Image 1 (cartoon, rainbow, N blue to C red):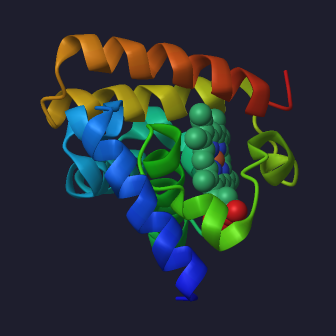
Image 2: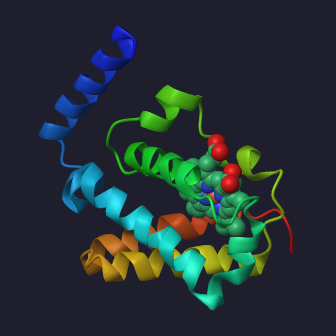
Image 3: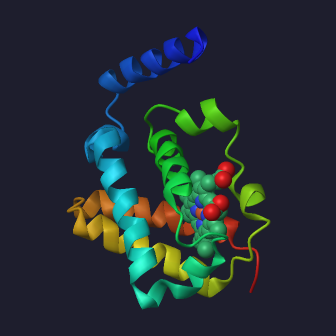
Length: 145
Ligand code: HEM
């Protein structure tokens, strides 16, 4: 990792220490990792998430998207901006344009995330705050009726 990236991550961690973010309140990288792994497990195994799963080009190989989602959520929740450092500006709508994302797929994505937050015992107030923000963001990402 280049030195400027290491310094920037260290600075972010320091800022984090003094200004509790959702990232810290939720339990940092370890918890985000558990949430995302469970999220994709649900997507792969719950028939109610089928449209969402089949939107993925390789529904049986979700390790890379999982890593990217962990990095994205890290920065989005106020922790280290890992996605930005590795891949540039998130521009989530643009990055999803090559996948047909319908209302059903979007609702199923949110369903998997809500279920994962519940199964990971994320406190109600944080869960509501996150879900509200994810509903908004996924509305921007949806690109089909
Ligand atoms: C707030 C909601 C969402 C967030 C934060 C999110 C986040 C991400 C991230 C970080 C990636 C990796 C991007 C990259 O490859 O550079 C990704 C990929 C992807 N997302 Fe989403 N996403 C959201 C909603 C959705 C929805 C509603 C769908 C519907 C099915 C979806 C389907 C996909 C697909 C198909 C990929 C590509 C996976 C692959 O390459 O195998 N996403 N998403």
